[in-house]
Amino acid sequence: MRRLLRANFARLLKNKLFWILTCAELFLGALFPILHYMDNIDENSGWNMDSTIFIYALFVPLMVSLLTALFIGTDYSDGTMRNKLIAGHVRRKIYVANLISMLMYGREAQSKTRIASPATIPKSGERNRKIHSCMLYLISI
Image (tube, rainbow, N blue to C red; front, side, top):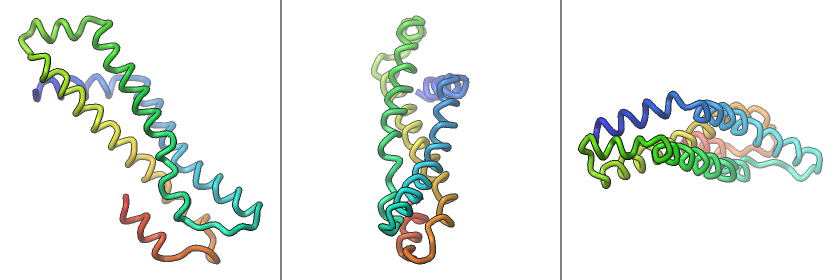
């Protein structure tokens, strides 16, 4: 199981789509709160941070599902799955290793997006920012 996980993480780090999605997550994690802030300033509706804390929940599941489908699909199409079975690995362990590696990627994608968002805290404006909102956000990281 340890070898399967190590092989999955090595393949993941070599994957170009992984790096493209990593850059996209960091960019969108910083961009969405800024756009939300600018939209609310234009409408003079007041901006609070509570409405942008979980904005990453919109696009992270899409990116994770895209990478998961392509990552595991490549396993089947390249014949790697057959080679793993011939090498003596049990099918259940292969599936569990894939599940664990993709769950770890999903958690990493969440944290990357949430780490990029505190760069937007200074944009929140002093008039509507509440200290408990900022503390809640920073604790949730």
